[in-house]
Amino acid sequence: MTRSTDGFSSTALRWSRSGDPFLWVLDQRLLPQSETWMPVRSTEDMIEAIQTLKVRGAPLIGVAAALSLAQTALRGTRADVLVQEASRLRAARPTAVNLMNALDRMVRFVRTNPDPEAIAGEALAIAWEDVDLCAKMAEIGASLIAEGDGVLTHCNAGALATAGVGTALGVIARAHGLGRKIHVFVDETRPLLQGGRLTAWEMGKLNVPYTLIADVMAASVMAQGKIQKIFVGCDRVATNGDFANKIGTYAVAVLAHYHGIPFYVVGPHTTIDPHCESGKDIPIEQRDPQEVRGAQGAFGSVTWAPAQAPVYNPSFDVTPASLVTGWVMDTGLFDQDAVRNGALRMGQPSAARPR
Image (cartoon, rainbow, N blue to C red; front, top):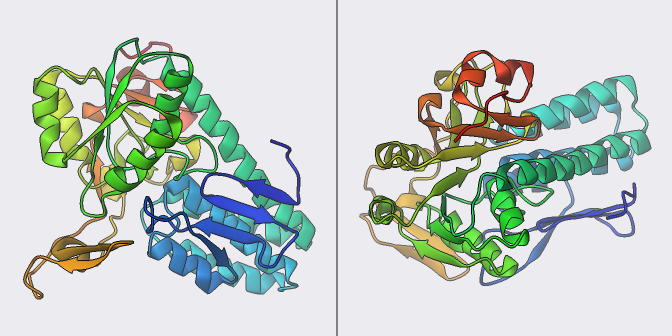
């Protein structure tokens, strides 16, 4: 792809200076039935898109928010107002740290160089950097996948969640692209079915052989010996290696530990939160109870529980580092010893390769 300041295009995001607005996102709520692109005309549009999961995935949220701020700058908005808009965008979702990291970087840039064209260039630099980070993770992680492996993944951590090829699904796609015969088991991922709707859609687009399973089937599939590796994404990584990901990831890690299956988390260094010493410091977003009482999407809306049924609906859970075989990052492959010795703080790859 040509790295132009005028355009950027990925699976789920488009930026073009040739139209108005410049920024469009693929409405992921409507997948797989409909591929509908939504214009982002304002900060309010971007916040709504993030909160309703029209745009999702920790890296992609950060990129999209940075480009939204750049669009506001190109419309002649003063630097002090841009800082206020960045603060509003930053608060759109509390768990995915890439959003905070990207906007903090944009604010630092705005305060030193308020030129709109330069601001747009910085936002595009964030997008292109994510493309590069994804490519590095894909190469490192693909080396862990062997011919004939059955691979389980949870939620969606592919090109829909990043500006590049994805994190966990980027690894899987790269292994497939290298010609390795693998089979992917896709957790449907309750309550929003992001595995069933999005990961299955991506696997089909990539022609990767896959089987969709309900979340409660993961243990049975592992027990049958069908899973040799597990790869998941992450929304925030603490410096001790604990990480937050879509609710249900912790259960998959526990099952993997019991069955002796290598469990890898894949994420760029931009997902590490240097202010989080452990998973206890990661804020967990609570979502709309109706997402558990029923479901809605391109098919319409259905409710199966009593209308006032009490609901506990955290969007993420935290998987402790003790259950992780290895951390696949753009800076390298980290093992337990490396993480215990502070490698995530230092950003240095592990000297010992996880098995």
